[in-house]
Image (cartoon, rainbow, N blue to C red; front, side, top):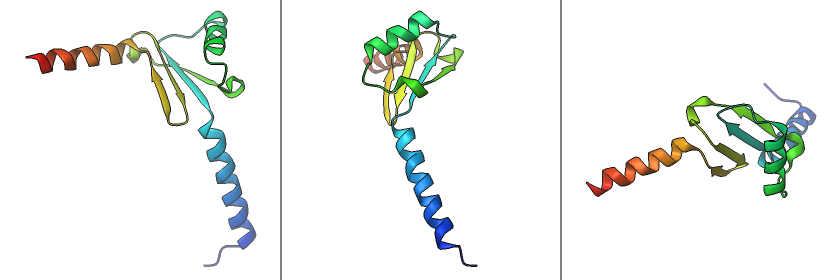
Length: 94
């Protein structure tokens, strides 16, 4: 089965554009719905991120704090990770 070359090129261009947009996409995960004040503070703290298309996701399992992902970069300020790191330190010291 042959694929139309134009369709193939269009799909390739679409996927490249999608990858570029995902690379710069901001995703914020928090344990509760962030208010406008908190979102503005994030924008001031990280002004170099593209906040126009940011996705805000609620995940109660992180207990408290936030996780910010931009492409492959992750800034994890959650209690869940802090507790996990503390658990590893205690485990290793025994």
